[in-house]
Image (tube, rainbow, N blue to C red; front, side, top):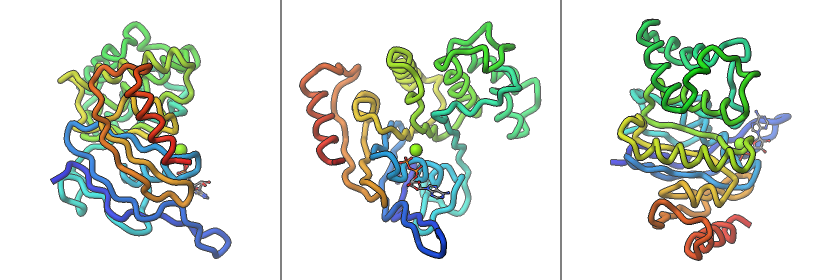
Length: 248
Ligand code: ADP
Ligand code: MG
């Protein structure tokens, strides 16, 4: 049984009385210890798909099951956003604590956990800083710390590196991959949305390709490149080309 099963998931909206299809018939699995990327053109419904998996939006049809169960979501799913989604009036510490407090974890315990994940993402010393005092990369570290502190079973990330400059993005990708290999890193699996094909081939065990809107499954490919991956290697570039040719 797969950790996550997405089956025949569709989403449409009613716009001025007309049905506006966003996603149609999406099915894929995510196994334990798998890092899966969803790639597709802008507007293909990637964020909508991620929100449905995370339980933030209802599908029009189809199911999302964790460990075979759809009825009761016993799993913890957290989300990292492209825009960081930090509360500007809260400090780094308070931004990380907020997800824990929402889970009714006592303050002392939540502070300890928040501190641990602030350290893990390399922000110790910045606990009392406000988001406006941080660079983009540091803001996203707060976003990552916040989503890890709740010890998610599934970590969802929606274009988490897209708003960062090239060097910062690459540094943070490597740090996330290092954490992912570490036993301290809580999630069973990662589901990440990106429109950056190199990023998908660099990070993912498997890539799910979605077509232009309405998003349909184009392909589901296991990236069998050894890690750490060499972005200039012919095998790497072949993978990027292969995915690119399926998207356009
Ligand atoms: P992606 O993340 O792949 O760029 P989205 O999931 O954000 O795509 O959106 C898919 C499509 O659905 C887009 O064309 C977007 O404009 C449309 N869409 C999403 N949410 C809404 C909404 N609440 N109302 C109208 N259109 C929406
Ligand atoms: Mg999106």
